[in-house]
Length: 108
View 1 (tube, helix red, strand yellow):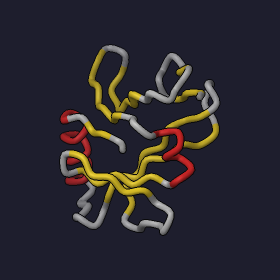
View 2: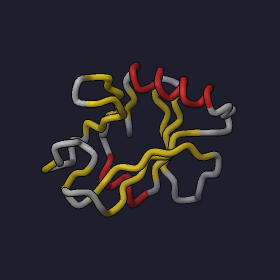
View 3: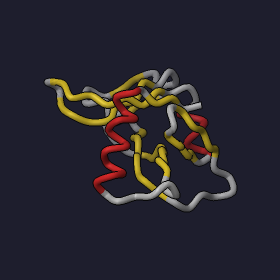
View 4: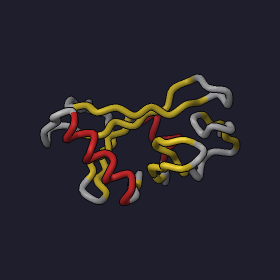
């Protein structure tokens, strides 16, 4: 399962409202090769699911992950931060053995 903090939920709701997305849209979370640690996170809104997708819902946020990415993301919590180190979504991934300084890539 992928969890969503209250802060991340509020930010996702705000973005969906600004983009005029209806309830058919969901958050797609994925992992792709790249970044200084080898793998990077990808967030996007989508309204078309695929047969192999894993679907979760937390705090009313529907999160969809392809099976390959789920192997790297199981147990991850999505958060949103507005701190001195920058504003944006952050991942608390228990599977990551190493992360880069900016938190946008990781290794397992």
